[in-house]
Length: 146
Image (cartoon, rainbow, N blue to C red; front, side, top):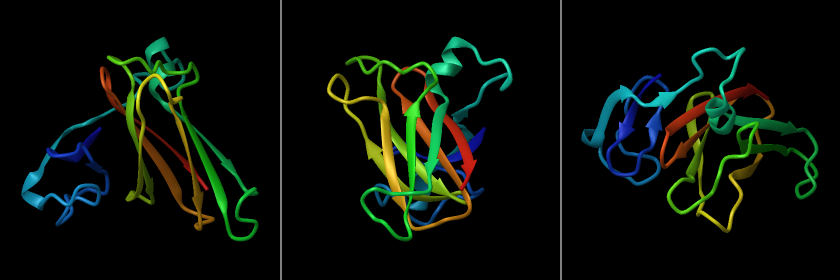
C-alpha cells in the first residue's frame, strides 16, 4: 500500500497527500517520499504465520472504565499471534488514524512492554486505522468501523 512517508520519523500519511508539516515530528513537506510503505496480507482470508504476528488486532469497547460518558475505547495488539518484543525485533510504534487523519502515536520499547496500546476516543463513528512498525518487517495496517 502506498503512502507518503516522513524520512525523519517514519510517519505515513494515508490520506493521499503529504502534509505541510509532519504531525509527529514537524518535518516540512519536502521530507516526505511517496512509496510502497505498508504491508498487507497477500490473502486476507488465509493469513500466514508472519501475517498473524503483524496485522494489528483492533477491539472497540463502547463502555470506558475511566471516562464514563462520551468515550469509546480502542484496544490494539500486534497480531493474532503475539509479536515478539526482543531488542533486535520489536514493535517500535503504533500510529492511529481516524478517517485517514493521524490522531496519535504510541512508542513501545522492547523487553518491558507488550506489543499493544489503547486509546480513549471522543469519536463514536468513523474508520479507525492502526499502523504498527516492526523493526524487522516494516509497517502493517488494519482498520475497523467505530
